Image (spheres, rainbow, N blue to C red):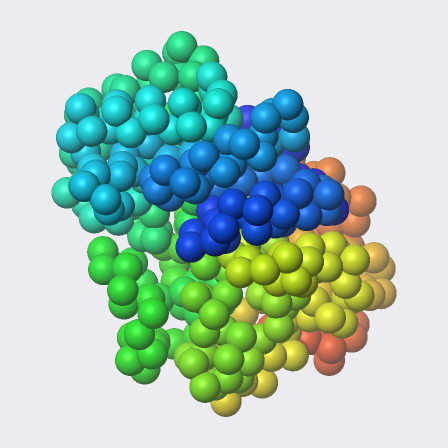
Length: 382
């Protein structure tokens, strides 16, 4: 298993995490076996948005006697009322549901208290200008939650959350299909093929800005929907008209700036192990460029996808990383000091480019790399 820092929290988390949907409609012994398999594979990051009592109970049982092996991202404002799930902003319901969470998990703290499912502007305003954020801050002050997070599918809302300075972790839906879509308050639009018909294939500017801001501010992205609800694994369902593999989907997510871990769905131990196998996969197995550059619909072009096909550079420039840093600055319209420092630490910078053009002959996306190196040199001054 590979591990990354969870942004400015300093927590070391597994690149592959486990989402709690894996435990829904599953017998207790099956869930316990799945959790044990995850722990055995080095998974240490778990999301728990589900309020179902039996889901909370089984995770609590699994953690007993080994709480230190679990870094929990558990949700505030997710309740189980009258036998069904409810996203709530009613503070009596919010507090009761969170108390139930701690009791059933048999713990006195949560590493990341995730404000649950904020996609609409009106909801964001209610949450961040009202008692919900105050309650989250009270829990953090008491040490009951160590860090505040928020889950959303809307990059515009995510950007606003990051800019409050109150949120350390954003749970966000990331994959190459969603990345080309503009912000939308209706999450269901993400799952409809018709949504993609008039969309050009380039990362939406607000999503790019979100990745950039998270990278520069140290706000970690934890990924949901890496397979697009399974659509990206099926050529008939994918908006690109071609299928990606699990490893390709995961690698795409993990090459986006700011991403720390992916909360994979797993209906079986076999599916979990398929995701975990990413960590030992060969570069050609992870390579998403050959899919995205040649797909029959929405083919990507003249946009660096950080795939690394341009390597090796004649003079040793890490071209993908230089492009990534430059893109992040362009998205914010400035050069954040953190990104300037990251760029300066590169052993070979864009100014070393000899304009031989060998990289451009290897790029599957037709990126004008020599021109990009010149722009990066001008941007960073070296």
